[in-house]
Length: 111
Image (cartoon, rainbow, N blue to C red):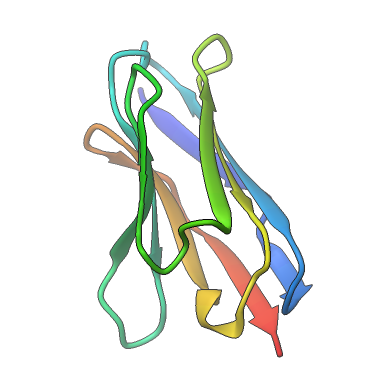
């Protein structure tokens, strides 16, 4: 069965950095888009960044210039490098590939 396992969340001060990782297993994901979403309490889940199988990327306006999404198809991994973090980045972050979701990892930014 398909499984997505996330890591890298935690507590960081405003202005700091975190790198999230998502390891996918159970299939070949090389042709699929990979994305990161986030959801803060009381808010809708929103798309943060997406990367296509060909490597093209798109970002939410709120994170452009600060976050970078990347993938390693040989390892079935997707990453989100988050720099210059702000308090408003606090949320549960989820990876998604095709119809599959990770369990979510908490990112908390203190101000």
